[in-house]
Image (cartoon, rainbow over all chains, first blue to last red; front, side, top):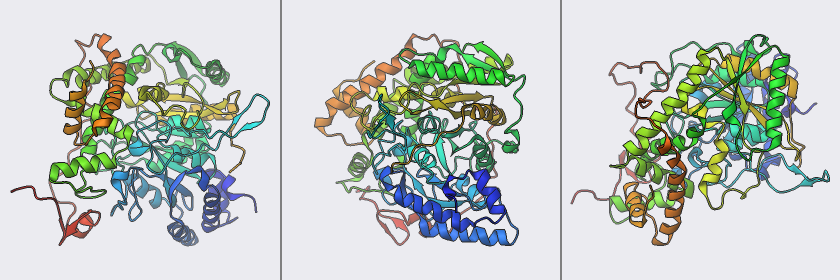
Length: 496
Length: 95
């Protein structure tokens, strides 16, 4: 039998329908691949028994003629999603062995459509990071490795990006058919770029946030990692729903995203924002961007230079808004109702000792920054100013879309994957700069997708980002497919 | 703007995170690096700009004020570090 883990969701779906193999066969193939890939650190919890039971149940449903959109498809779930009866930690010590008695809306949607849970995936602690190095379980190793100038493989372990690093690595290494991620400032798109996978952050409000550990509530959004644009489209249809349990879940019908894959982009207007050219950006990234422009032009799109003048303010504004919301959201971790407790002399002492022991260095920094910018006397100077800047960032996009732009094409990241430990040393701001191209999308609540565009001279994947109008994810799949067809797909050589 | 040692300690206390004396200098440097980075915003004129309060221009949904869940005290307390008879056990708060 061929390697079942090499199949895309679309391919597995067809083969399952033809009874070439069962959902249980497919799940076993992934469980075996996961076991051999533990050195990558992608999974923080494997759930083989549950996976087999869910796969067997899927086969039983299929035998009765009940076939969901993701029937029998094995998925990995970022450890930020609450999964009923399965430990959920946000990769933080403070959640200890927390085991939710409820299921997040997005994962409930996936199981209702027939998907199978393989296990929980590593991520940065509370999704705060761009390299997956802040997890309590340790870093994730990118399945991609650098090639030296003489063509030999450099064994230096590289980061998969973050915060959804486990999700990206697992999808790239074929340790699940696809995975869930969350994106607050680029946490789906940046790791997708670093691992040669497809990642989409839907419009704010498209997917329910209920049951997903909150980081920054006005920016967080759930989305899938997949191997192809088509697979991402199949997944988003199941991810998205109107949820009465999330008041920001928008009451709009969920389109059949897969139908837009392969549709012509003739006449679509693609905006190229000049502000996304930054100092020190490798020439290869600029070259890939130009190549992407040429591909879309060749497919009949109209290319238009645009200006998004407030782009450079997005990242500084983000580092006020996101920590402020985090400091508020993370106030709930007090050692009383769940998670870790370090007993102190009195209640305040207990809180302080628990939070000092439970939060890692990056989370502590952000909670403190957030507390500071919200504190008396600083609120207007920092928080209100940042929210005003957010209005300007959103307006830049609104004006471009009003002038007829259908989607915006940019590079995904200012570099390819870097080494573990290379940027996690001194200055936290150095790490923050990774999200310079992705963070604007969260600040404006827009949908953004990263599609692999090619490999750099070191043999590492680089991604292109498409930014769309609110709730027009279909355009992203349509345009993304053109890029995928032109660029091809990228799979790392197996070494683990 | 930048923070001094006493501000670091004050913010740590507001955030209810104990910070050891030996960590204060390092934290002060890191926080000032971040504050220096976000200071770029002070160069922008935002006098006539409304702060963004809702990213999606849709009115927030409201639901009927009715009980939709409950009678699950075991589920509510099952993850508590310390629980007794379906109550969370906490250090003495009132003398």
